[in-house]
Picture 1 (tube, one colour):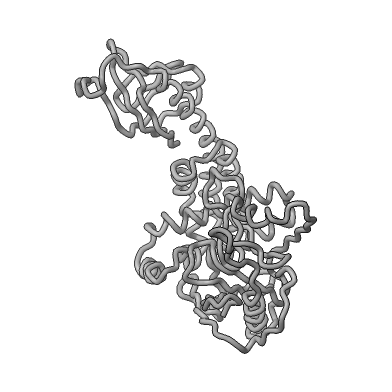
Picture 2 (spheres, rainbow, N blue to C red; picture 1 turned 90 degrees about the horizontal axis):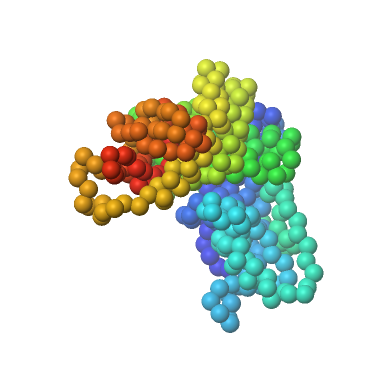
Length: 400
């Protein structure tokens, strides 16, 4: 039971890292992805798992007993209940919004809403402390003694690769979430803070892609297991249930579709995605999570993406500018069918200042555009033939 009277349910997960560290995690269930409470404690590999879980349960009850926010009486919304506040920094969920969101008392607030809460303290001094959440006492001044054996908590056994239970996890299987957490933990030790943040951002986008699009690659019992968990409300079932082989098998979906179509990533983000996925592929092989052949194929795909994706994005910019300069002499509906093309087409031929899309062409473009273009790249185009010449009317994103 939370300090504000809410009845909360948590799923518990216990995993072992290759380093020998045991990680116990608790996550609030029945909330939107990224929302709700999340807690973690670490233990030694030879520590009794029941003891580690007991420490985690105590932490959960201690933390949720403290309420940092109260409903505002003056206006709809929330205000800081006392003089301290603690929570978790999370991604906003929108790549166009640079500011993060925060989760306080298990509720998500955007940066503007959080700013409004603290605006009443204008002129006051403040301090901030950040931690990775693995300690036993993470709250800001969380007080009170909570018996770890009291209260209610619904323990959900989260089965991972191949339906393995906790004993099986100790011997072999790791979930995507587990290995990605290990990967980031290792990178954190060697990277500058700003670089590590980019890694974290790309890994989170990779998880989003896997959970939202890559389930279609599952078959047989694996697909049934995913469907059962997803229908029960686990929207991140893919990365919880599937093994790391699924990461490299879906590099094409992530780099060739998701980052372009769904994220509309900048050229800098595309380069970062290629860099991170290349390093991840090698890391997975080095730790025995995927075989060398799979890692080599994934590394090659990421290398191509690092070379081609920024160029394709730049080509898309040139084509978009060209299309905006086209002024049609008549309404599009008045064009004869043979003079109007609207389709996803491959670039089939490239010459200086000229491109062919499918069987349509040549289309006059700038030399900068033709220098970037590659035969085989796909793009959505609307083309009109005016005075015997094909002109670009509309264009979409370019897919290498």
